[in-house]
Length: 118
Figure (cartoon, rainbow, N blue to C red):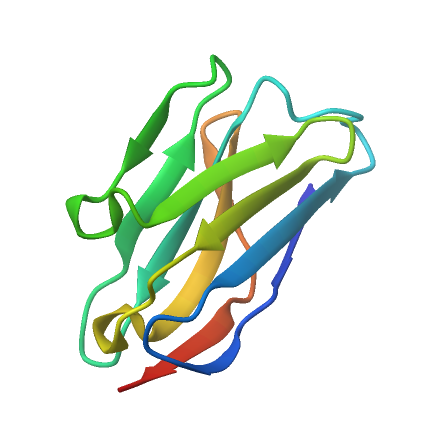
């Protein structure tokens, strides 16, 4: 079993930055270096979409809509993944979910709400 806790959301104005973080823990796994970790988001009436993912080899995959503005990173010692969001836009408003893939099972955080006003 894997526990995923995501946080850091808030209400802010367009153009401001925000950083999300997500910590993963497991009674059976001491490190998540071999797991892909990433962020998804879901806006009202939309389906959940990929924002950014960081695979064990260090290769990232970012959605086109966030390229150049969002940066995903991870601290393997802390089993934590971060999402630095810059130049936020109103269309970035959504609930952001942290995701960890472990043994072909997706584990999700409860989500953290990011609201960007114009």
